[in-house]
Length: 77
Image: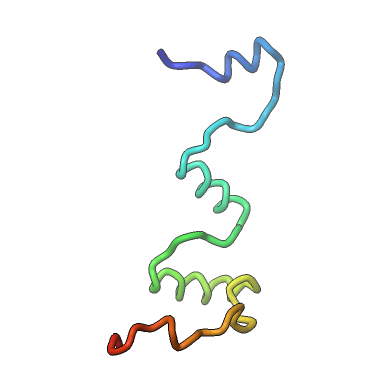
């Protein structure tokens, strides 16, 4: 049984945002608001950066932690 949210909102008188929580709705919302995409292929990222520039959140500001030698197993390199 499908629920007709539009009719329910007319009856109740509520004007809320869409209740759609699908990935498609989220990506459409990001696209309409010109937000930074979440996942692209390397080639798509190059194109996106060329068109929009590199956002501050994607610029490296230094490592948050130090790499320790013990993280790598001996002979794994």
